[in-house]
Length: 482
Image (cartoon, rainbow, N blue to C red; front, side, top):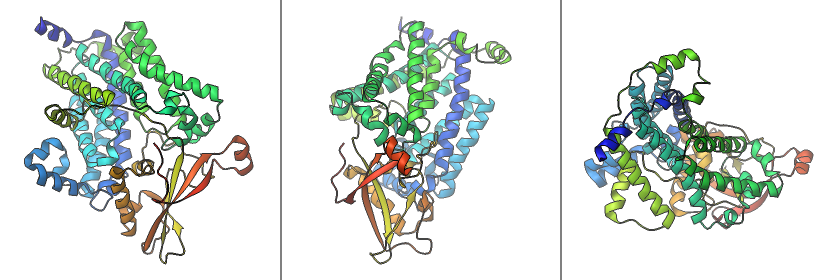
């Protein structure tokens, strides 16, 4: 019975040939955006002269684990991790994405893309520990099997991935005991306090409070109820796809969240079928795809499915109940997740109610201070918050996590300030403006301001998008909570 069930799951789903073809094409575009985004900043983040040099981490990992480090840190950078290698891998990912989009050696390109992004995922350290990175890795790994044909099992695994992304995000908001989610006021703060808002966030922030509260209810509905529709009959799946896509478009209209919303939208393709996708694609493409002969999926997919499902259930249990795992369970899940699969998702489980912005300044004498300027995070009050999707400036984004003064996040920030004093060209290239072109400053200080969006009246009078209040010198100010 079990063997027959597995055999049936490995058979090709005739309803998803066109859907799978379109998904792989769109995945190529997401891969391209992800690789290009990191290519222009990776040396400043983790190069030998960057904030967190990856070669130092590799050395420590080998000292501690020996050859086992190769399995816990699967990356091509064991060969070399200098600036050339880091950028070469990132741009090779861009090239492989283009080749995939053109339809040449699809399965091989998907395997290469997964291996390259997994390498960058580990190289990026804290700068690439985000849910969109692990989401892309798991979606990319499954796509390698998808290229052989859309089996029923691979479609289910994509459904399971989308379900986890949405449902875990909703559960995380409930178990966090965050008061702004509990009393439906989260969107009163979200548009103003998110990591990198664009101009759309300012307009959403001006909406009436009743609409913002209704928006929170819609968030809970799409994250806690709609995900179960994924596993129901067709009309429910179509509803799940529609509501999820609407939510992602609203997020894009109000937030700079790189390419995760685009990836979530294309994951919704698996809630559709060829009856719908066939109406979108040109007839010559649909004829060519439908005449292709595909065999049953590889039995290896069943092994991968067991690993993904079991690991994701374990980490979801840990997240929902806040219970530590026994070592004999914890260690295997850590190893599995180091290969980019089975991760937990918890998008905005808590909501910040105030925005603390840093102004980093340098001085030669301790009296006259000049400010560095970042490319994208809020700074000058009159500067229009920029729409930068699908790019993610990792430094600007990570600065947002420093105001709570969590010890685990202070190390990289201290290293960043040190690199400014060392006049690292790779790190300085991550900034918009360096006021010390001749020689680095002797002193560095960080001033803290509380930023708020202006009202429509204030913006009309001053032209400013932001207003601020001075808080003091970091870290001698009250940490942001949460």
